[in-house]
Length: 172
Image 1: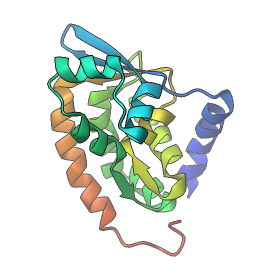
Image 2: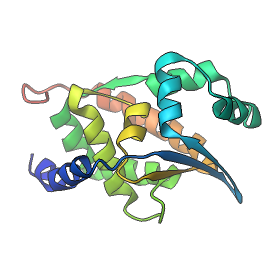
Image 3: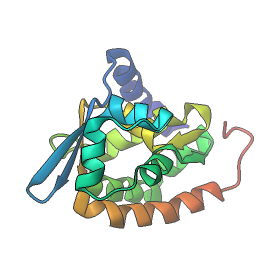
């Protein structure tokens, strides 16, 4: 609980400023492509593919339905359980691994930004990727295409471990 208190000011400051990711920048080596987070949110909610997203899906040979499922997949976890995990040595390693693929514009404080985005997303005791993207505390969010696959596999394993953690009476 003490660790939740440590990040609470960051969350409060982020929420009060209205700072949230507006643009996702996918980088793959020297190439980059920007996508509007509101467009991605609209797609996740409705399935409607904007022209910009359509060209992105074509360019990177992605299947819209698979992307939509990934964006909306919910991980059920209590806020207290999540807080304990994210502030444990294992949780910090997971955040660092995620930080290799999901980065702030300057490439620093990735762990803190991810922790804040994930905790903000868990206020309803579940987290989805689209919520994390919406709650990311910088206007731009960078995704390293080379690290995404490896990171996704690692995080999927850890997600299963988190979901199997026993729920405590105060985990909500």
